[in-house]
Image 1 (cartoon, rainbow, N blue to C red):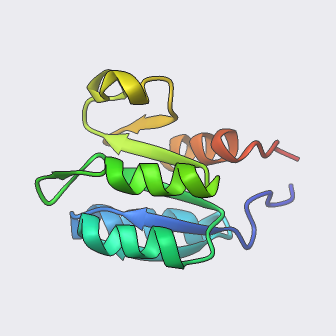
Image 2 (cartoon, rainbow, N blue to C red):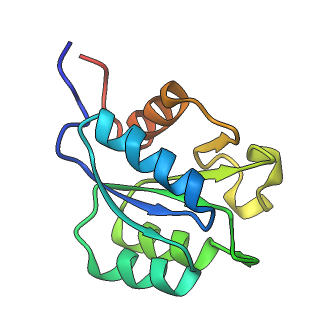
Length: 124
């Protein structure tokens, strides 16, 4: 099986360090290069604007702030992203419904499938 996500740069925005470390490990296992993690919306916004990215994983609530400014910046640049939330897609505001989302606690397969779908990458 080839690794369709090999070498992809994926921004991680997550304020819980254990979850961020888990995501980094999952991404590395898939052959991705984690960018970040950013633990605040401001840091994530800087990375979303300045870094070369293939995709992003965004915790919806970062240190008490909503992550949507980062989502807007990524959308403007055409960078696909996946929300992670304890509430699933139902926890998203109406304007973001239908956007790829994974529900915490997530599995490696859920992260991989959501990223591949968001990036339009097929399993080889």
